[in-house]
Image (cartoon, rainbow, N blue to C red; front, side, top):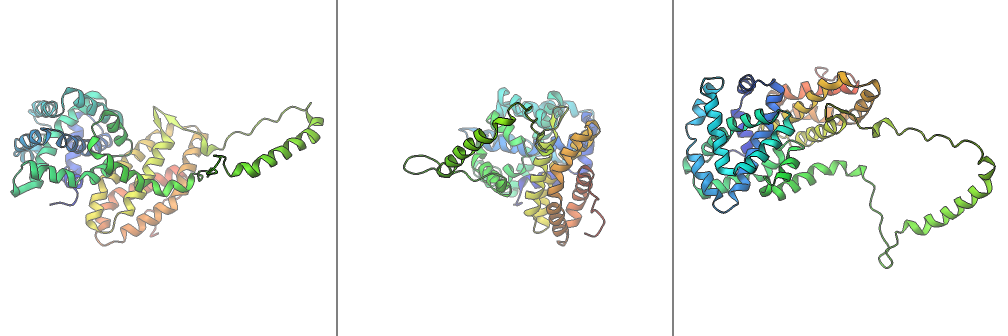
Length: 372
């Protein structure tokens, strides 16, 4: 059994196949990749939640068994005359499993995350649902698909599914209730990925256990009283002067939104995904497992890069200031990972373009090809 079901499916959906999907649906390649990166773990999350419901596992078993021949014909189906009917069958499959309400919610989540629009998100889901089902059946293999093997597989993959959900997609699924089977896995993932940002949050003040008064109050109140006295004694002669205008907040605190995309937050999420994914790479197998999330981060960074031309000079400075402090750590991590035997062949096609784009956005020289 493969160690990561999402990675197993992304290996089946080769770059050539994703390019053909993009052409068939009228998408650019980046949007198609972003959509696939969202759809695969989202479908697995929905199916995992369904398997936990009464009767849900049996419905999944029956549907998986019906998709045994899909994988052999899928590549030739893309762009063929029968693609529309294939997508319709996939959409009907989802309706029968999830119900029209949950299917619509899933479509809306994919459309909002990937920016595809409702119709194209629906088509992509209809196209990939039979493929995901077929790959589940192939993964279970010779043991045969039954309730025990199916639920065991999905239960063992909850953490990997939660990790593979692109940043922001998990929250959208949470709102729809479709990721209800992944709460504990998502919490574990969130705690793990959030540890490196904890230093930015000030420690919570400890309250006096008896009276509920914060400890800082005992020294702050006398200082406030002294400050008030000094102001009264020294500040009155200058009261007639115009109050100085407060300085503008530093550029780093400004938000940058273009075309409905919060550039600064998108960059922050992408950098977090990059760091977390790279930290987990120790060999070729873990590199392949990390690839879907790295590809998702690359898609988001490409999207930001495409919007830079619409930014003002001050907004570009804000974006650069958000990226620059993270670059030394990103460069060290990527250099370390790419030195692992065999990993460069898997990750370099994704990592090098990401580093180049980040260097451009931060105004720093790229280290790609420099030997650093």
